[in-house]
Image (cartoon, rainbow, N blue to C red):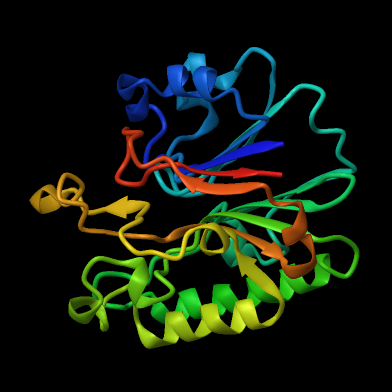
Length: 254
């Protein structure tokens, strides 16, 4: 199974960068998009229905904010359940987590909060993180997890181009990194780091100062899996040449 995850940062705007062609050419079994930033009725008609795929949309209450969209190839998803949110209204209103139950694992499409330019949202983010971990641990009692999406944290210094200058900035605070350590210690694995040990690999670049052209980026998009499931992972990679967002897609092959 081939899974692509992509924080699209406004799905309609990505059309002019060839999003539909990307979907067709990659021919993945599952596409998971975060930060769709559209209500269902404002999504371009060409994206509401992709031939050969089932569509799952989860929109935020606030217009133009957040939102998740998944395409699953017909015949791939013989799932037992599909769930939106984790049962906590202040989190679920922001459309941050979709859960797909497959026969052998749960797949989560995830968009965890940003801490804010002045870290004003850090307490909320840490609260969401803890609730998310609790939710994952509950699911894992029955099946392994594959967690995909934008987690809005660079875990280690190797995961961003300028760690020294960002230690007090959103996405690289000690509190956020400590939580990531805690999450992994519960028995989850960062799949990309199982295949790539070197630096210089990023999934997000600021729109400013030509950061992408200079590869001054952050790796904040992940595929995490339950530790016992890692034996099923064949490949985990970054598609850094794909445009259309300030993020790029990431891929996983099971």
